[in-house]
Length: 218
Ligand code: DX5
Ligand code: ZN
Image (cartoon, rainbow, N blue to C red):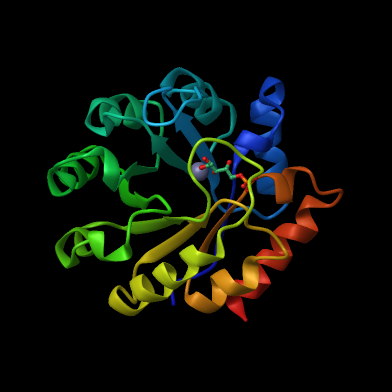
């Protein structure tokens, strides 16, 4: 299985101190930072877009921004996110008709490409061709739209299925993941772990990051 990567979701951070919050997470052992971009269309909420990501990448040298694009037209933002310093562009399979050409466009801008599936989308919706072209597959373990929701156990078998089909790919889980739910995710084969409230609300975020990592590496 690929190496463990912890990607704290900044949605649970203090947005007024966003660069400081990202630095705090990197210091605490996080490899990536998970940036939740919401457009008010694909999901009801609006969070942040390329201008804010650009400030973060300037303010936090070397940051790896794992951009989770909860947007209705993912084709539209590839250039802006790349220019803002995005390292990985993860779009929702439900939001596009042409996942393969979108993956090509993301790669052409020098970013890694991720494909996300919401709780009601089966893992079989990711074809061998699309999964093979992507760098990362994201199994949502809550309905996209906000942080702090309850982990949906019924999504875990999708992780096992994707790990069996794509042994070399990064497989990310996102939503309600923390010390109480990590074991099921890591056993199923997820190696990229997103956690928002479980890390940012912890008294010792460094300890939680280490705990999540240890579970993947066990
Ligand atoms: C939900 C977002 C998640 C969320 C995770 O739409 O994609 O990244 O912020 O937050 P927690 O870990 O609190 O569920
Ligand atoms: Zn997310």
